[in-house]
Length: 83
Image (cartoon, rainbow, N blue to C red; front, side):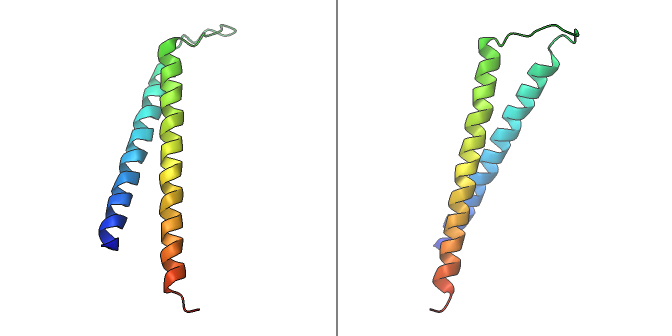
């Protein structure tokens, strides 16, 4: 039973990591599209703000999953150690 849980958590972490990678790639593409004019300012439009929020949300989700995975792993290690 534990192995299935570990596998599903690991799969969820992998999906979250791909989601973050995708969000970062989309943000990189959007930033590359900015005109490269020295001294020119760029204003964030709603689409860029949405991309930034997507990256932040994906990063936080991945961090939470990784913390849960570590805590679960530490709990198993502690439970298997003799007292």
